[in-house]
Each structure stands twice: as C-alpha cells, then as structure tokens.
Image (cartoon, rainbow, N blue to C red):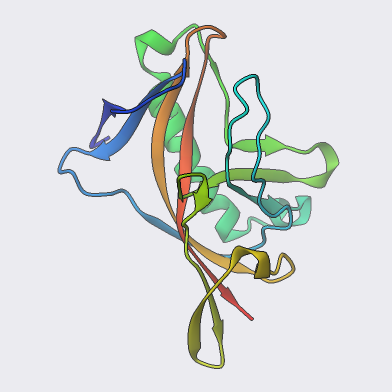
Length: 179
C-alpha cells in the first residue's frame, strides 16, 4: 500500500492515534452511492472519558448482502483492505481488531463512520438535491428513509495499548441526498 502513518499532533487521549495519508501527501478519497443510513447520527458517545462523537451508521439488510449489493461490496472491500494491511504490523499481532463492520445478528450489517467535526460541532456538509438544485441543509433535516451518496476517507489508525485493541476510523467528508 502506498500509505504512511504519522502521529496526531494534538491527542488528549490515552489511545494512540495516527493519521493515514498517501506517501505523496494526497488525501485518500472514496465515493459510495445509493446507501441508507437508517440509524442516523449519534452525538454523544459515553465512555469513561465522555467523548463527543458524530457518527453516521450505514445499514445493509441481509437481502442487500446476499444479493451482492455494489455499495456494500465496495465499502467492505475498502475497510477490509486497510484492516488487513494494518493487521500485518508486528506491533499489532497480539491486539484485537475493532472493525467498523458490525454484524447485527439476523438484521444484517452496520458500517460505522465519523462525521467531520470542529469544536464538537458537525462540519460535514449535508447537501440535498432537488429538481436540479443543490442546497446545504442542517443535519436536523436529514431524511433517514432516503438514499445518500457519501465521500469518505480513512482518518486514522488508533491503538489502545491498555486493552490491546486497534481499529481504523473512517470520516465522511460530504453527504449528498436526493429529496
């Protein structure tokens, strides 16, 4: 893989975080089209540190998965590729991977993403398209029953040395929704 990791400059957490970037310093960007996010976004994630996280959870039913839905296959390919790559690091051999692909028993799979934030406010643009016009919308107007298109990028490799876990965080840069 043509990527490198560099430590976060300002990391106030006990968890180590590393930016994932290409060796040529360009951003890794993917576009995924026609997916649902029925579980919306979560603004507070309560851990012992009470973190504020803004998430969008993309849902795939068993029917979507069994019918080889293109968006599902592409998202899982992107995530698996990075998870396999970082799993080859000797430092992580004895660590458990916390994947962004979460199995929900007989309901299908949820794929978790973070939204871009600044000072605990969501900054990821939500762009709604209607009758060939485009407008920025507030996240409160997000329609969970309509498909979205997303631009995503791998944000960081995180390593929890205390609990011997690691994972890759993906961030959503932009969301398009046809209304």
